[in-house]
Length: 282
Image (cartoon, rainbow, N blue to C red; front, side, top):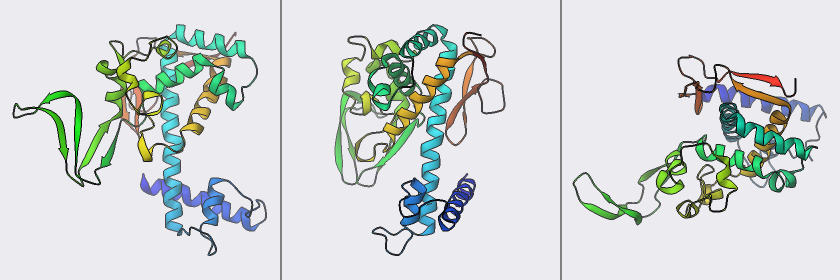
């Protein structure tokens, strides 16, 4: 995977360099991501990067900027195909809105689209867990007492400097103790109802009380762009097309590993979720 991403990044970089030298793009005023990275290779740049460092940045952007959104989009279409009533309700809102929305309208004027997107991100975070390393010794208080293997009941966990801590995004986003009895159900209405987000969930400090974009100083820098992209594509697709599960709404889905975990139909070898798609109104 590392080698493939390096090859793709190298081709992007070489093409941009050739276009810059041929005058096809204005290297001085190029504000694209690759253009900015190319400027960092110049000797007069404030922050200088080697070719290897530029390629590493590009590989990260390909994985973080493409694969995560692709996984989320797959889950959104899958859930809408499995829940035709939710899909119809969403399409009704989008058709009533009419024209293509601006960024502000995507953010503020389409509440059910917002609910569908955030319910997808809650139930199916593309990054199932993440790691953090303690920079100093600390004692972490627990919200509820825990019984250890030795049988001792503890109210806190001591962490020494250098310890790696795994945090499960999926478990916290789907926790019944945090999100209520229907935590594992795809129900966008929870984002619109008064009291739909339980008090326990409101204590989660992440974006919209989710850990999908992680949190803290290393929170996802591209979440605003990712959300706009996600909503724009769903707006266009659901407004114009109807989606159904190829083998009916009870089709069994399992997880498989791509670059990130992805859904697939149980028993099928490939990493995909085939859907029946028809033009809406036809």
